Image (tube, rainbow, N blue to C red; front, side):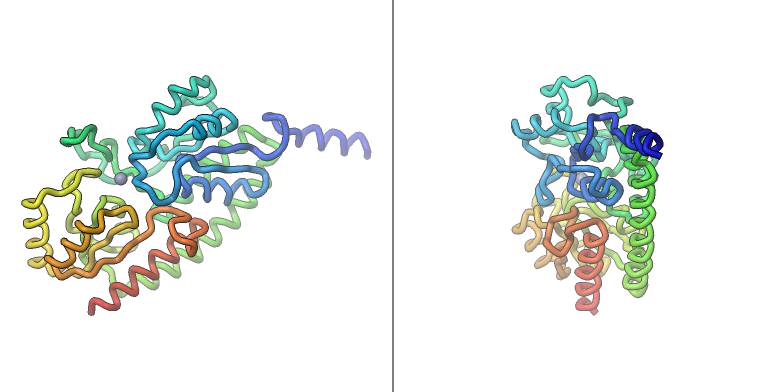
Length: 302
Ligand SMILES: [Zn+2]
């Protein structure tokens, strides 16, 4: 009996040396999903804060320290984290290379949108979204493959904890499915609504909930619109009867209010990442907040 117990304890001894698995993610959304699967057997930190242009994070020494102390790095991939290459270069750690069990890119296994978009160069540097739209965590159904990939990565580092991770993920997926039917029901009367977005953050969300994105305020992701572009855009919005403009906390507020004033559209500020507002402390809460804001705004446009 004692011997059996000892064997069980031995089997439970994690490969990384004990204690929670230290995970570093590139976004608060991935952090939330890692925590949903990893529970109290992970200690996750996000390198990027929730409300900042995700494509333009400034790399700081503390990021390097966090990465070096991590057992697992979880990324969105594609060209979403252009700052990460520099960080990885500075870290110069053979564990954090593609294909290593310590490096997870969750874009694998995702059905990407806009992957046919040609790579072009904007006036201000390299065009982002050049490999498909990277904001795929905003379709709640994509949390299924993402959490599966997280589960597999965590279980590879700690095989003995696989059943615990599986149980956590199962509970999370149940909450997700309940949420999805709640959100779909709330959005059902609004299917087909035409919207304009500031940054091209919402194609996955729009596809899931039946919104039609007519245009983006940024002519190319990350590039501010010219006065001529804005004039054409607002004219098209009036002609198409677009009633809703989706901005984000990081959007340029003077551009947003200008587009709203000239098009007559109502502005709704949606939250692109977990933790962006206190009511979105986790992944499910993120959708609760956005669906609430959206349906309230849509209700008010009638
Ligand atoms: Zn983007």
